[in-house]
Length: 71
Image (cartoon, rainbow, N blue to C red; front, side, top):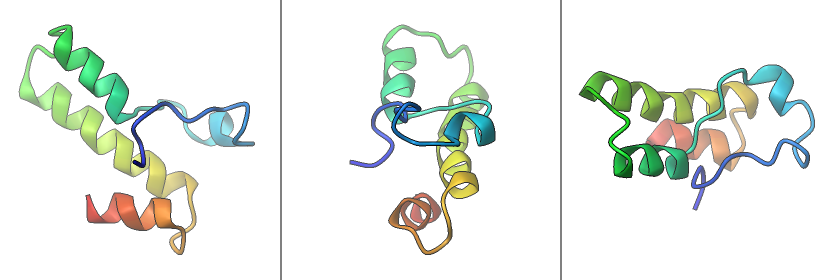
């Protein structure tokens, strides 16, 4: 499943230089389970961050970009 875990920056050259605020669904799930979100807007912002990061880093023809676009 795409975006389920943090991007392994040691395996993806340039990711840390391009993406300043990484986010993934596993982190979001952990935050939900820990009641870290105090409002819906914070949750939605993190969800949007997952897809915007994927679309910023990956080229439009990649499956990562296209999956993020569909989400």
